Image 1 (cartoon, rainbow, N blue to C red):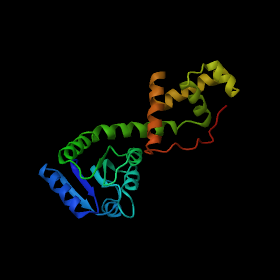
Image 2 (tube, rainbow, N blue to C red):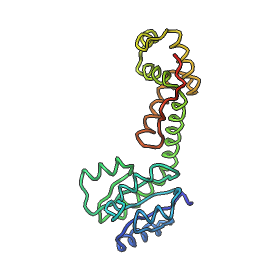
Image 3 (cartoon, one colour):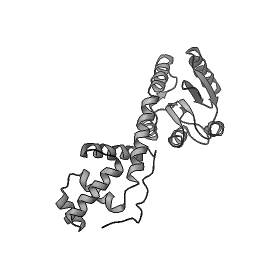
Image 4 (tube, one colour):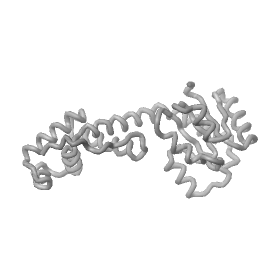
Length: 219
């Protein structure tokens, strides 16, 4: 798959033809689909590039498609276009994961600039996504008790107070903290806090799932 591929998902043939022509003139590889279902059927396991999708598609809407493609092996920067824009729809598009929201008729100059910026930003987006997934994976390796200790540690609670809150000894808290640092590969408290922040981003973006802690629950 070419990193400069642009996928147009648009049921209006005239709009699709216009966008296609503009993108091809820029030397970009373009694929066209008239529905979200057709795109998923053609790329069931993933795609790389920029997705340009109409918000008001029949069947699976453009926003539903963007949200669906946030997981799995898809590495797409989505641009949502619509003929009937409003603030609520723009907010919904951004929450779904779109990088931009444009109203028809689109300005060709702005459209190309937006597509180019989306493609250029893909490596950084993928790197950040990798950090999020790795952080969630590391937290999933903690026991239920270690998760409890972790939450209090990043909240700035002292060991003796953590011990009192959880009804365990201060030495046990220290042992849990050491295990947390080891399992998370964090060399300092700031590094641990950053890891928790990456994990929270991953969960918000649904890139990874925080599993229920195992029964390996030490005191």
